Structures are given as structure tokens and as C-alpha cells.
Image (cartoon, rainbow, N blue to C red; front, side):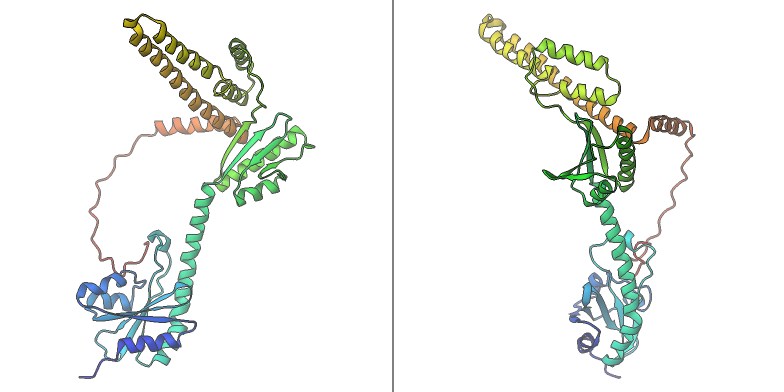
Length: 372
């Protein structure tokens, strides 16, 4: 019987002759299951898939080359003087990135390392490079989209009528520059439109850049800038002023500004009311009749808890008002009619009866096209 060619020596010699710098690592298999950990990374639906699926392999070798490329080398079954060289998929990538990418199927080569290296370089490596480039391109696009989804731009109308934007994401900064925003020399993450622009021009540029940022996937908010802190007037004056401003609010931005001041922990009326209740509770417990002190404490604590809940409810409502105002400013009031029409249409559409599920077929994992 002819002696089988030495896989370990062949893999070492092949690595020396491939273009670029390659190393070889030989793996003997003490038992049948030992062939599968590496074989499960096989990127092949041809010769290598057939060999791994149908035969017990006593050993294999993995060649590692430039840019993380890896080649899988095994004996060709039923032939003493031939080997199979195939590609291994890059690790750490989700299967869906491989969907639709043709497998760089392996090839059969003879036992002469020089001729085998020339064949691999001519036939296998170009297919492998092309498939790797496509998978890595998809991964980069997905990563870029993931980063963009975390981008945030906060627009703020200032007291003088100017418009500023705050962000630290490079892609959003490019859009702001194209819209005419200039960096604030005092803060590298703040940008402003020129004050010489008319209100109409500022509004138009804001609408344009908000739509662009929305298409990019960035989170956008729009708010009125807080006024400089002023000495807090008496509590009754604060409430009177806020009631007047709420009654005369002309748009949701004014409503949001009123709620901001009502929620201010330093000067807002709720903070002052809570302080009154807390101090009153202490004094009531100290000065009231002994048998009633615990009842005073429980009652005042319940009132303080309701004030805190009211503060939380108003804070959530403020967020909702602010987001609705930003969307309305960016897209126009018609967006709400469109959304409501879509919601009513969806509710009116009868639900189709789901078909009974078809039992899935069980398939082997080795050599199955990745992502398909």
C-alpha cells in the first residue's frame, strides 16, 4: 500500500511558499470528535465539506496568514498523495453577515508544496480575499450604524434668539457645519448659527439639518435654554407667575419652559412646598401631644410622598411635551395627523389567522452556508 504523504511537513512547506507571511499549526486528533471544533469554522460547501462530513480525519493543519486569513489543510480521503486546502471563516462575526456571500470553496492540490502554493495563490486566495472583503464591509457598515444610533444632538434656542447645537459625534458635526453652524471657541462640543441670519433663515436651516440627522439615526432634542438664575421671589409670586405664563403659552416650547421652572429644585414651588411639609412634620412631632405625634409623622410623610410622586409625574410629562415639540418643529404638525391615521388604519385591519407551523428539518452544522 502506498505511504500517505506527511500532512504536517506539507503544511509547513506550503506556508513558506504562499505569498506574504504564513505560519502553520498541526493538530493531531486523538479521537473522532476532535476534528469538529476547527471544522465548524469551515467556509466551504465543496471538497472540504464532503471530507469532514463523510470521513474520520486523523489530523489537520491551520495556516494563518496576512490580515487574519486562515487556511484549513487536511488529507484528501481515498487518495494518498493529495490534500484539500480550504478557507476558514473569520471569528467573532454574526452569521447574518455571511448571508448571500459566496463561499470561497476549497480546492484539491498535489503533494508538491511549490505547485500546491501556486495553485492556492491562483485559485483559492482571490476568492477568499473577495469573500472576506465583503463580510468585513458589512460588519463595518453595521458597526457604523450602531454608532450613529447612539449619536445625539441637543438644539437650544437662546434668550437672544440665537440657536445652538451640542454634540460630540463626528458625523453629526459634519451636518451641522454644512447647515452653517460654527464651533463655539469656548466649548468644542457647542455650535451656533450666525446671529446675522433672519428668524426665517434659522428656522429653515434647523428644519433641514434635523431631517438630515433623523435620517442618519441620531437622537435630536430641541429646547429653550434656561434663563440665568434670579433671586427667588416669594412662593405666591412664583406660582402666580407660572400660572400666568402657562395660561399665555403660545406653543409647546413655552409649556415645556413653564414645567422646567416648576420642577426646578432650587426655586420651583414643589421644592418649596415639600420643604414646608418636612419642617412642619418635624415641629408637629416635637410640639404636639405625645399620643398624636406618630400620627402627625405618618400623615406628613404621606403628603411629602405624594408631592414627590407629583414631581416625578410632571418630569415625565415634561419629557413627553419636549419630544412632541421637537418632532412638530422638525416635521410640521401634519406628522401627528399622519401617525393617527396610520394607527386607526392598523386597528381597523382584520388580523389574519396564523397558519400552523411547519416542523423544521434538522441539518448538520458543518459546511452549512453561513447566514443562508
